[in-house]
Length: 433
Image (tube, rainbow, N blue to C red; front, side, top):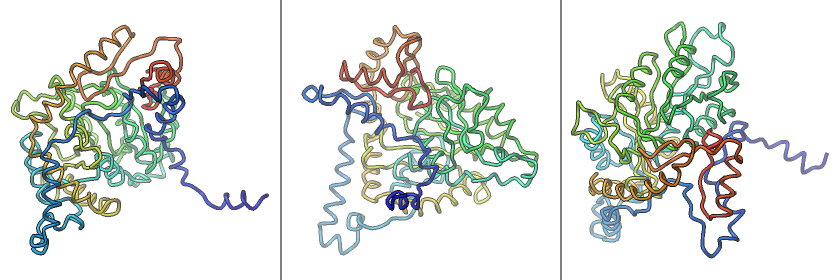
């Protein structure tokens, strides 16, 4: 054996990391790079990443300019105003003026009463925080002698087609290397790991399947081997906005079985037809389920076009005070927050506060500009056997004709012949789309 190969064997990489999905952005770059030379003059038109076409509101840049000016002003810097300390840490949970504004927004626009709030470095970090805080390596039930190793590992449910970064978070933290279209199979080795992938019908999660799995993993003690269920609404990548009655139904089901429900509301401003409208609270623009076991994730990346600022936030119920489940989750997640980020960049949080001052109407005006492009894409895809989406977020999925080429090969051909990049459904656990 050579010295170089011997040396390599001594340095291992985590098997979970090795088995985690490759980032979709990197996979798309590989497809695009094969044909870049052909399109070097005209360029490739990418529809392969959820990036809006508008810029953040001017109030963001005004907030940044004011903070920078205070930092440059020696008199104000010596007093220690907000701008003078943009280089410092802030509390783990976030910049206090932003937290106050977010709590008001969550109450007025989402119907969440006095929530605990934690600012994160984007919604992706918020989700990783949830996985680390809520998932165990081995479920904490005391009857392990009666269980198989597969049943002992706590699990998280996602629904296909899934948001790949959610799956990557679960894989890297709790395992689950078999995640490509497994929802349609009963024989699922991934049950032995932390990931369960459920089916959808036209982008709507199958609650019958979910109930059967919750029943399957129900413990004699009353706990459940499924620790958390993840739902994105409006959907990424489905482009489907679920009704408020459906959200109530899944919240009731998860509560009945003692399972956390993680609601990713990144696209709250993109509920195109107001499917999530609650007739009992018509003045709430985007109502969220206000229950102890429901944790809500939000982002500034989409509606406010602040993807590069990496600012998201998590909202927890404060019901039942210090004895409440939401309060406990919030307090324990602060440990994770302090370990990963300590805090989100203070300057990004100041920018987010500036964005909020622009108001929801500003975002709505920008989102409305997507109507023309969405309608054009829906019309262009209308000849396909089946399409999903067009009611929420910024995504549409089309089913490829039977006996056609592999979806990854199809995506490559689109780039090669038309200079257009789209994401293959396989990257979201949905081959053939």
